[in-house]
Amino acid sequence: MSLNQLDGHTILIGLMAYPIRHSMSPTMHNHAFEKLGLNYAYLAFEITNDGLEGAVNAIRTLDMRGSNISMPNKQKIIPLLDKLDPATEMIGAVNTVVNDNGVLTGYTTDGIGMIKSLDDEGIDIRGKKMTMAGAGGAGTAIAIQCALDGVKEISLFNRDDEFFAQAKRNVDLINEKTDCKATLHKLEDQDDFKAEIDSAFIYCDATSVGMNPLEGQTLVSDPSWFRKDLVVFDTVYAPRTTKLMEVAEEAGVEHVFNGLGMMLEQGAAAFKLWTGKEMPVEYIRNILFNEDK
Ligand code: NAD
Image (cartoon, rainbow, N blue to C red):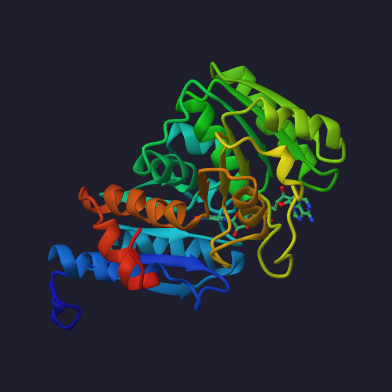
């Protein structure tokens, strides 16, 4: 279905957030629909908390197939939905809504996207230890999804800020509800941070450090903290090479990733929930970023 062939049967998918005009998701999904010949259209709507209830009702009224949800609505939407999938219930935030004949189910695909992006590179983190920093939206989705999907041990670091309580909640929930063993650590304890990275299979930075306005900064600046066989994953994808990635490369780390694959795969997971089809991820990567893997 070409973009100029929308017709009376076209199925609408939304994106409800504010601000949202900068989002790449409309381009991502509309090109994927076109490539696969699916009669869907994806549109962004500027929705704040105030307009959220009306917007969620509109999903049912307009018989939309669903929507992506972003800030500031990821938590506020929960009481407005009929169901949450179990991982999303633990994560406590929604980025995707699916409408099945008026029944709205909330999902979150960020953690799924992170794991899938590593699978795509032939890296399996199941049964291994992950040391990570960050317990905001991205960090929470990653920690809980990884614990549910079979990561054996997670050492979760956060600085002593307003997200530390969330970090504690994540660790408690993981220990209570999954087979993963999670421990909580303060980022301020640098000896502990170094030791936990040293004993991990993967180090994941899910903080905002490294992206604007913290571009050029990193939580690990000493290359000697990184073994060559450690996997280093930064959730940031703008800039494409972060300071953390530079430090890892200086250390000779072989597997160093930015968050681009995660971003594409979280979109692909939502696409699959709405359409039942696999998003042509490499085709979309090329359109959005003009680059192959
Ligand atoms: P958030 O605001 O919800 O959480 C921010 C986190 O960073 C918190 O844990 C906070 O304690 C930590 N932090 C902030 N400044 C810090 C500093 N100076 N030192 C140490 N820790 C600090 O943000 P979020 O939505 O979770 O996003 C976090 C990162 O994940 C961002 O870089 C974002 O670009 C990235 N992200 C990537 C994807 C993707 O698909 N690749 C998706 C979502 C978010």
